[in-house]
Length: 311
Image (cartoon, rainbow, N blue to C red; front, side, top):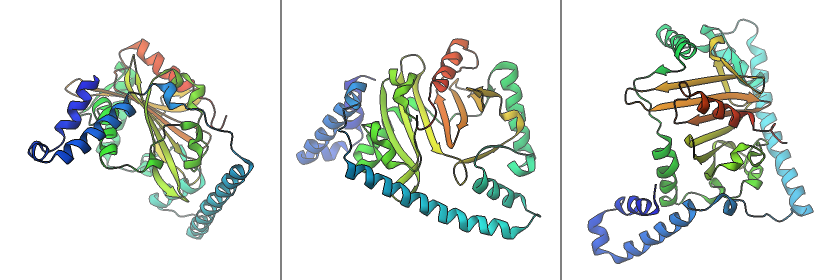
């Protein structure tokens, strides 16, 4: 998308009659355009500004904050564990899912009953993964996600227009751990460091001013816009029950769920989900990696280039 096109999007998002009659609005809107222009056209080197070495006081303050959050999480988890023990051995499917959440977390291979859902939904899942094995992708009625339109540009413009809280947008990801409830992966030590990064946003659930997830948006010259989500997993964290056939790939030897869906308009959506330690990852790309072996190999190389969390 050109810089002129970006400016047009911003100007067309307002009320034309109001702009004509109120020059103050014009000036304000121009300011937003200029800010968005600078923000969205920065190079990666400009994102990674050098950060001063933390002082002893700052290090101790962070350690104290981390300990407080850990204590808060453990307190809430203990209450739930006491509740789970009181259930006994004869558990409902909902209780089993809740038990798995607090005791395990992550990707859990489950029976159809524990996974839940109607027979038709479970059959659809099996059919989709059969198609994945046979032809590399499966068909859907509609892919609602358009990474370039929705995540690449529009979401960032909306964030600017609504005055997104500064702690939610992170230009310098070197200090991102200060805003998360888990130790994030150093994407600068992976192939993602070679791809222009559009944005990094924390989201999810909040505890002690720390978030449970972060998403990075990249503009890759080959695959286009790529989204990388990293979430707190493990006990009490992000949990996903899957059927055995859903774990159809591996990432560095770890079980992974790989899907490619294509809608009637030809819009593809490739996703790769796996867990490493207590971190859950999802990489999403708008590309049919099921029929493009080179794109698929690159897609998996990106995933496998991520170092272990906290390293």
